[in-house]
Length: 249
Image 1 (cartoon, rainbow, N blue to C red):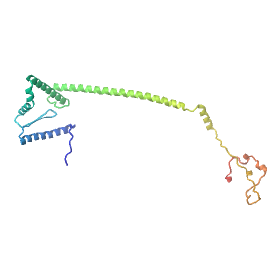
Image 2: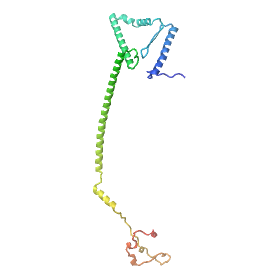
Image 3: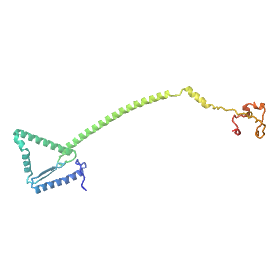
Image 4: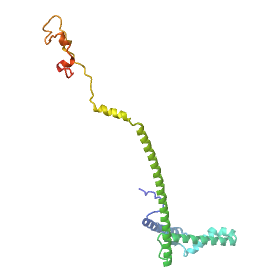
């Protein structure tokens, strides 16, 4: 099973980056040597680490001769067409830019805490002062950013308080509009304190039952005939409670 494809990007872990650099550097130097031996080619290889350390390989006795040959092949035709003054000016500009780039790279490494051994005590003090100034500037910017965020949050809080106050006022107005009038509350309280009476139907008197015609005694069992006077007895005298007796249900 083949190896997976490696994503080409900067390795963030410092230790892994150094280990990978060492392995690949050795492999590249080995390939350059094999190419010079197998193909009888003139090979020159220059490698600078991120700390500025130089690694080189050259199949010829002197790498400077190989660089001069490269310079003649690459820039010889251009320099032949240019005036000497313009060529010299361009070369000085190139040297100036190269020096500036090297200084910037060295300063960057020093700010990261690398390659501090060649620095003198005065240079270390200047570097310390520069770091303190940068740290103060960063802290000042951070404080200002936090103050701005706090001010923004206070403004948002004020807006929310005003909105809450308006909603509470609307709620109070709605409660007042739907509030029950006082006279209605008094009437309901008076009604709750009284006993509720229910309509009761009067019990039918026994005069409701009429004797059956024919005089059959069997059909008149349990029938007690009464006179007209008993039929007109008030209802409340017969049944005080007003409920129908159970034997009539």
